[in-house]
Image (cartoon, rainbow, N blue to C red; front, side, top):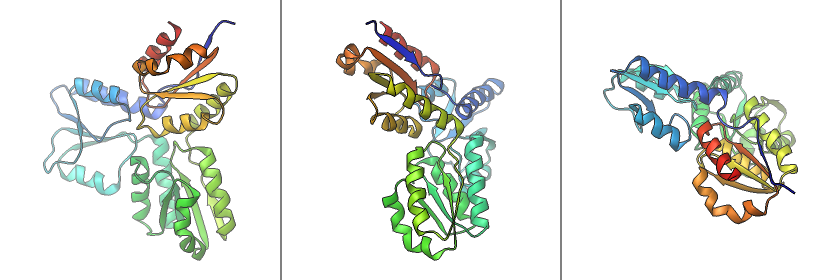
Length: 287
């Protein structure tokens, strides 16, 4: 039986990432003599960050006392306090927060204003979640972040003491994680309002990858190990078939035995994985 290789339809840059990368490049091209900087990594992909730096776009780890030129807010968003600091430093601010992430921030603010105990489903250290939490905390101190039921149990007494509990979700989270937390909250909440803010791109990518995994001997997930949506993708598929998570085509060398044994291979990629990485991986498997 000949070996078949199928590339997922929902592989690579999502709308928010594509918008951020293209806009950053356009800003530099239109203002070649102006310093263009990004606070933190624009997206979680080392290849893209290196490309931006080669174009003269700096990645800042912290806000300087005195800034010049343009400072970009990355696709994950930032807290209102950080945005104000950027302005006070003297930068011209360009906000490239993903529109879907903006919606989560706004929903968390609405819930906080309306007296809900706000539960943010996500990883507390992820920059998107840090920004969502900071926005909600401006209006209420009753905010919790949890990536599992076990983590949320630390807030059980506070949740039980509130009449209303509201839930928002990191855009790249697993639906299974949201469902398990909602099931738990249903058992301890008087009134529960859920905003499923997992973005459509993430939902489509995960659903398609599951279907591919069911009919494949091996699924290769390409993308950064720092990317939440990419690591979640790999985690979801491990319960269905053989999965390898690689950052680039060079890492395929570590899995040649598994690739050789697999008759049906599927390739998918995270939302921050550029097309050229996907093509290199695909070409190497085909060879």
